[in-house]
Length: 547
Image 1 (tube, rainbow, N blue to C red):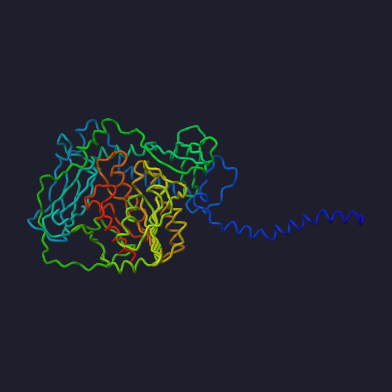
Image 2: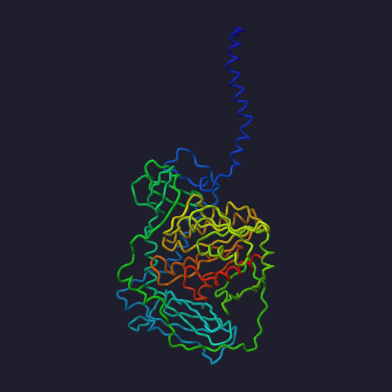
């Protein structure tokens, strides 16, 4: 038994401790709820931006594990390596020659009918006139009628034995010219493929760190070969990584701006480089083939279903006539201004991608004059762009995709977010539309970077459809560009491989496809930023999907 005085003293000591513990017990559920409901900015909530973390990272809902994603990447890489095998060559004379190769029209006629197919057989030979026994040449088939401002892509089938079937579907009446370009011989294709996957160092990323009035520049990149202390910007769920050399006396979170420049490096040999001289790129293989005549032949057009999200887009998926894009697989309606305004009323539209999709947000005020830009006080042309019509409750936003983003211009990384993370932040509903594109900025890097990102976008869209099946999602594929601009870094061969990967990964998802690759071939638009009439027709296709 304690004496009474001692017991009173003990109670006085214990009482404050009991009260404190009771208060903690009572408020802890509310405290947890409070923190969980905080919406932290994406670049803080999902990124580990320390050199050596001293605190546990916030738990991430890891939907895509490396064990799931890495085998998919390896499987795609294996298929591509089989598609593009090594093709060493002793001399340029043993590579494919456009002049010596032969094109033959199969079943030639004086006149053809609209809707029929015209088939040609291509037999490729080298500069010595010898028949080649393997395929893999990068070819581009196109038919056109300049007087009608008409064009369409052709379909090329590689038999992998030195012969190809080139098929044109005859969409319009009149005199039609045929073209088959040898963009690169198979030996050049093989060299580009090897060189692309050989290094990450073609681009120099320079990050600007800001701390008060102090500004420091530092080297950054997808990988860095240095023993210096690094800032690591990691997305552990999607296995994405970006690094900067840590500036002295600067926190990693002080990274504010980024710019890039080209590093003078090449993984091609001198012999391989000769295949990409301007005179050897995009050489016509059908110089002697004359026009063909196409008649209507009293054929009636089949009634097609209205264009809808989820429809499979064939190749070619359309053609141009009087500069207007006409789809071949669905009925594309020309909407008037009243119909467009009614369709867009109440819509939230998110454009995620590069500057080729930014062209849309510049053009849309011409389609809907009541849309006005809202200044978000960003920096440069790659800042977030916002169009608003407050009366009709229309919001259209363009935001660039995250690393790699290649430009000489300074751009902010404060609100940086990979497209999968951006999609995760969108609740979605029947009046929400997401349009995304990837490609141009990935051409300079090994293909696994692109494959991983596309798989992550696919998974993000699957998550979106689980919480909001009514949300509309549209893939706008990348487009062609100048075939003579720095082939090793930016060539269309790299873009074409990415185009095939993108279409394959998304083929089973309920998304709309705007095939900008097919469209820009039809328009013969060899520019990374296609002209306004191409953008107008892309937007018309977009409106057909959502209206």
